Image 1 (tube, rainbow over the protein chains, first blue to last red):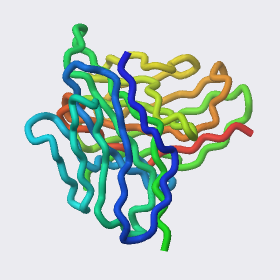
Image 2 (image 1 turned 45 degrees about the vertical axis):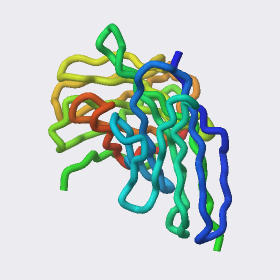
Image 3 (image 1 turned 180 degrees about the vertical axis):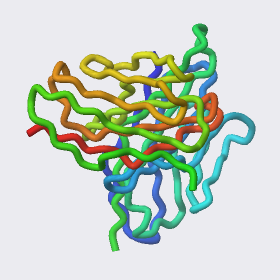
Image 4 (image 1 turned 90 degrees about the horizontal axis):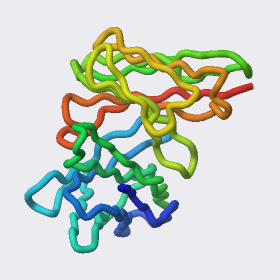
Length: 117
Length: 114
């Protein structure tokens, strides 16, 4: 069964420092990959996604993620974080070749990013 | 502005009661979903619906029920059979295949059993 692992439950980092939030998935078949961000007491917002093509995808607020098929990873990075980036980040994967025509969208357990002044 | 509206934001339930969480979207999306979020467990799928008058169980459907009578609405009922209902509930929708477009989420309902 497909699974998504976010190795770090919490990541503290100082403002303006770089950060990497790790995400690994289990399946070797074609997958589509997503990162979502959740601010306190709010829903999730799509940050970026990988569907096909270039393995490096970027968001409008400076985050980027790189799809690495050999390592089955989709780590999220930002070269310089701001206080406003403090939130919980979820990695998600969806498998493309479900024979029944249905799909499964699996979320990781989340990584809480805490940006310190 | 288009989006998903969940109500109420906070809900308190006595043990043994059924409660219904509202989810309305004006995005003209075909598919709608209900997730439950617990600390440290990520999001778990309760039910989903890809078209009106049709829905499927997710991974943790026991103790929950849904209906999809209108495209815009996908209410979730937490029944007394759900033994541990205290959680944050998120409704989402997508325009088509979720792996193409991702989800749009509502702002959630926090349910507490008192």
